[in-house]
Structure formats: structure tokens, C-alpha cells
Image (cartoon, rainbow, N blue to C red; front, side, top):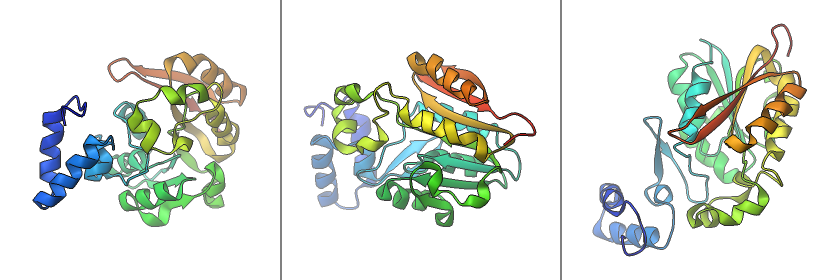
Length: 248
């Protein structure tokens, strides 16, 4: 595995040994990893905020930096509140919300059928919906969402080719490509969020630090009150945009 370019070959080898049921399984898993398949796809799970999240082949792998987004969102979900994990992928963020927000009604949605099937393994399957952004959500949630968290794709189209091969070759492009400046999907979410948020609710989404000024302006232009949260250690940047009290 080290010869194949795995930087943390020894750590990965231990995970593969633990995951393999037989020597033949181990040999096959090592071969798949050495061929470039993401480790999480090989072992079938990723650790995220202390949770073991099932990750199927072809599904976006939750990033360590996104733990910052999940924790920021979890801190804002009220007891017995309503939370939505939009662009949910494996449902990792939603799983954190469900685990930390006691009594919250947590929904998730994604446009990718493979992601939806995977998320239904990590969340209440009845609350994982398939469709394009808000079109996937039950209409009864409109105006009632306390925390709307969206792990939107934000890589500019021209930069997708520069991503590591693990992402570029094994994750769905729809989960990576954010359009010409990386903010196309974020703008779509911002545009509809006010009508789904409860009064005083919050929209949170991840972006890059260089995109923060444009993302904050886009949220403010829709009547939201945005601020930025940054974690330098994780290289994570999050927009947190509050709806106005008394307005959806």
C-alpha cells in the first residue's frame, strides 16, 4: 500500500485488517485500495464526529472539515426542533444532528439515488427524501425548519479536474461541482431558504474562505442575517445565516 502511494499506509492497513472477514476479503480490499478507491468506500464506513457513518461506493465521502459545519449546526437545533440536512450525501451531518439534538425531527435530502439509499442506512429512512434540493422535502416543513444545513458542492467547475483522484474518479461530480465560481448551488439554496426557515431559524452551509465574501453578500441580499465561522485547523469555512424573527 505504501508503494501504491498511501500516505498513512500502516494506519490504513490496520483498518483493512479489522474490516476483513477472511484472508481473501483482505486481499481484495488491499487491491481495491491500492487501485485508488477511497478507503471509506473499501471498508464501507467513515468516522465523523465520533460516529461510524456507512458510506457506499460512489457516494460522497464526508470530509473531516465538515465536522465543523455539523457541530455549528448541532449547537443551534432547539429541543424538539426541526432540522434538515440538504445535499446530505451519506447523511453524516444529519446523523450528528439526530445524535446530539435530543427530540429533534431530522430530515435529509439528496438528488443522487445512491446517496439517498446510503443515507437511509444512517438515518430514519422515512425521513430521507430524494429530489432536487427543496423539491424533495415534505411541504409540511415549509416555514418550520429551525436549522437548515446544506453541504453544497462548492468547487469551481474548472478546478474539479485538480481534485485528488480519489474524489475526482470515485465520487459523483454533482457532489463536487459548484458551477463557474463554486456558488451556484449555494445561491439556489439561499434563494429558497427564507420560505422554509422558521422565524429566527438558521441556514448553514460550507464554502471556502475565498468564497466567503460573495456567499455572505448573497445571503444578505435575500434578507438573511449572515455571519462567517472559520476553523483554521480544519481549513473549514461556514456561513451561518439567520432568518428574521417573525418572518419565514
